[in-house]
Image (cartoon, rainbow, N blue to C red; front, side):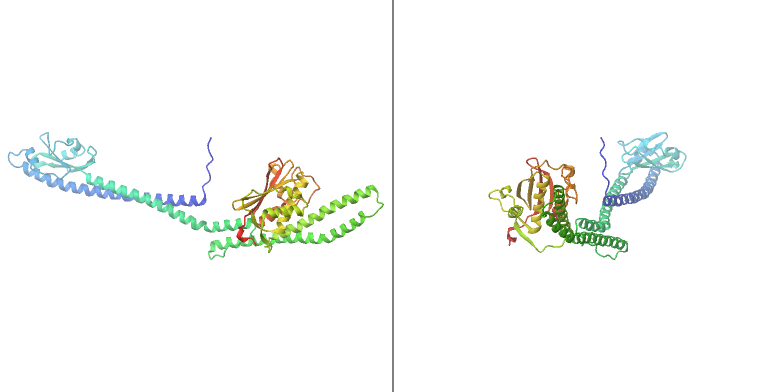
Length: 460
């Protein structure tokens, strides 16, 4: 099974592009430099070998012109350069200045040219390293002179030059990659700022703006982003003001209806059908009133106005107070472990009491009743567990139930406002915490409220 290749990031693509560009350029320059230098060095080596061969050939010719001189005696009297071997062909016989080197076969390429009476220069691969072969006809003594010079020094020079150029190309490629990395970081830095600002805006910080820039290419992006955030903030404020205004305007008629309905319920002589209708109206009107109160609360939470009632309190005591406010038994609180440090949180007490009350009411309406509440410190956080005895919440509904006016599949219609858990989530987020639903220890659902832990020295 083939694994899908993950897409390459923009920064990696820019780095690779710079590295490949540097590699291509450095390789082209290195090859051009190497072959140009090699051509010049080879020509220089051929000229040097030719001059030396002419000098040695003149000595051989002069020696052979002496009466009774033998070729072997003449070669012994000549000292060829280091790495060079002299061959002389006379009367069909070959003579050499050395016996432990390759034979006359090294001169095969130049023999036909020398036999025609011309000077010839060629390279042979029969030696290691290669050698330059110079052939000179000696017509005055009816002989052919050959000098084979092994280009060991040239070979070392070319090898050193190739290695230096390869290392230079590798270093240039690495430098290109580093330059690409730096360039991509510089080019993508504004994108990182936009990403950071977008994350902060999505987290609810509508005061986030991008700093002004003098770069004409980025000025349009900065202006468009800031205008977008301004428009979004204004739209959110308009929606919040509209919901708050509608809720506020409805409070007066709802209060009037509640008062009138209360008087109607006290009226004697109503028929059973009328009594049922009045009771139903009373229940629906109470639910409507609670929905209005929740909408007003959500409007205040959406505004995210900083609270001046933030205090460091004990999470355990906060839970106990919420139970008392709801007229519930204090036995529902699971005692903290003996010896553990008391978990402290910095919260707006009234808002957190409303959160806990909403969770308790949710357990009563949709979870078969509240079973227990636990407080547990976990490092830098404090978790409050609210568990019910119901059948739990399905995994696909655990996020949806925190949406406004959302109800899980098993919840009864016509109960609650559908805003309680939304208020819980928004309140906890305003306190830089989190809330979620999971399976309880006894089969029901458990809602976990996580808040940042406060230090004891901050307790007032």
